[in-house]
Length: 134
Image 1: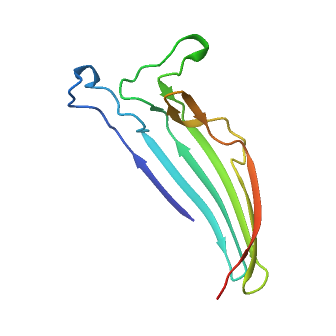
Image 2: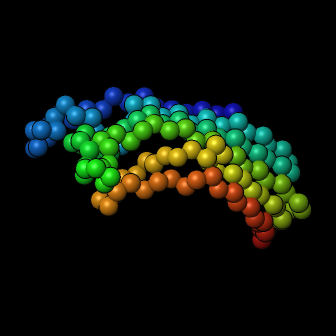
């Protein structure tokens, strides 16, 4: 098992644009936690990873952009994401692997661009095989 995290209290204290002073900095959540349960043996491994991110502003002005249906809120909501991966070594050079990202199919976003928000991927499944040349 592992876990890492951060607690952050970021504020703009000096700026050429004085209207920004005292605002929270963009993309600075107050908390971020990533934790993982791991199983690892000679032929198999599995990981269940959780990521928990607090709400944050997407621009230093801490203001929404647009209006009506085109409005992008000032804050990006916090979110939680759970991922799972599995790998099985079939033979010394061959492995099968797969996983599920966003297992709980959470609707969230963490990026805002000039043309709006970029939603994160919905639940996705992947699988494949790996051949290692030794």
